Image (cartoon, rainbow, N blue to C red):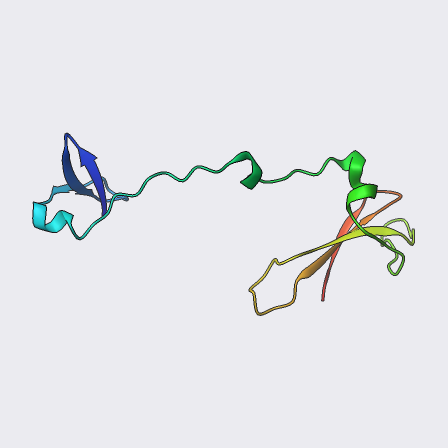
Length: 104
């Protein structure tokens, strides 16, 4: 149950079924009503413009595209599994744009 304000009183409300229970002043000291977190523009997700990829992502010549056989690709690393496992390396072919991954 989560605490909520209703008519200047604190009530406890169940998230799944909506059941609510009024609380006494002693019980309200045990709970805290949090505020909504707002993010600044700087903290939002960054979307990369595909026309700027050659200047943003590094290029490797150590892989061959499984689709067209070209020998250059952009690459980036991303943690897709647990923190104690190595990151996943993604590639994007410079010629055909095919994207594939390699588990390191």
